[in-house]
Image (cartoon, rainbow over all chains, first blue to last red; front, side, top):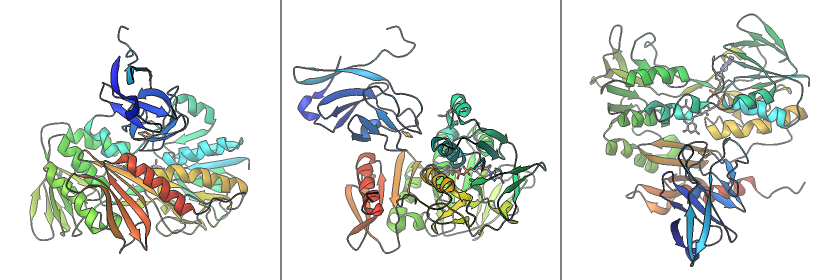
Length: 106
Length: 389
Ligand SMILES: Cc1cc2nc3c(=O)[nH]c(=O)nc-3n(C[C@H](O)[C@H](O)[C@H](O)COP(=O)(O)OP(=O)(O)OC[C@H]3O[C@@H](n4cnc5c(N)ncnc54)[C@H](O)[C@@H]3O)c2cc1C
Ligand code: FES
């Protein structure tokens, strides 16, 4: 698992981007943590820079919205989901386990 | 309404078709488009598509499944040539006619060309996929000398992509500074500086006298006599709304189809959306306007009168030289500027345009998060108190 930051450094309503390849965005949605691919499935924008409201994040470029629990888009222009990743808090530190890459041996 | 016809099979036309079905229209839906292609996205044409980072498949605006769901009759590669006075019969260029109860005009705009350059090889405009394919092919080989005529957004993005591909680039702009009408002098100055930093030359305040070359372009001659050798010339001097074919109709046209602020034209069963529409006195040439207007236009079309107005805070973005520029609102000359985050030196900032203490517009460079927050405030403020109906 990849350590991300201390839990207190990711308060409710905030997000952080980790420089994995591809990058991952971690959100604190009113106390619950979720991680998804950071790059919008529409074009090239960072979802960690988006607008978080409840469990929906709106892309900062063309306003596609994703459910951060499932990675599914809830409106256009995105039509494809982003991947979700497992998040855990270990000793007060947020960790992410990146989902296996499609096509790679997992 | 039993039949609705959408003229223009691109961004605004597709969103109109979607809106019609989403709002319960289950009659016959005809979509007429003169390009042979299924709807595709234009913004990447000057950016990632030109550099090769994006493929043609990535440009598609809808997938096969969605197109099936729309249950539309697609008349692609077919140009609409005329509309009768009552706006009930559409004439197509192959002589066929379409009788219709409602019409959504979404014919967009075409690239303005430089008179006298037609047929000269090496001279390009950038509006369509075919344009972009041709330009990409011209830029595919070894380093060329590229002259971009026009320093607006599309010119600047194209110049940026050409620099990225390793070409030697000069941008020529007739005005003393590009983008002043859009951004005001200070911020236009910042954007102009991006060219030089990336290694592109920017020549301003001088027009183009003509192009040299017999079969293929060899140089661009400026009004002051300077001659810039060129292998490839990209003409980026703006777009003209495609309204010519409406000449025989009774619609009012003046730099776009005149509409009220609900996209309704002077004929009750005809609405206009996207780059071709002058909505409430303003014609936007922005992707987001072309995606937001259709739902409103279709609601008004189906209601038979204007029951809803479009969002009053326009938005666009541009990517050049690695900088993401985002703009929202309506700037006017004389607005004061306030940089509220970052700085010009850093090359990353959020700036507010203000008048009498209220924000009129926002500009951000590489500050998507604070920009989004400020843009929401601006939209709320522009919309005024939310009606409680
Ligand atoms: C290279 C490029 C880069 C851009 N970058 C950005 C950007 O970064 N940000 C931004 O906000 N906006 C950008 N835009 C603008 C954005 O793409 C347009 O606002 C948008 O495409 C408008 O959509 P539309 O459907 O109204 O018109 P269009 O996309 O122009 O589509 C109109 C369609 O109608 C067809 N048509 C025209 N006349 C007829 C006829 N008589 N019969 C049948 N069919 C007809 C045309 O062939 C075309 O397919 C860019 C545009 C271009 C060209
Ligand atoms: S890049 Fe996210 S909506 Fe377009």
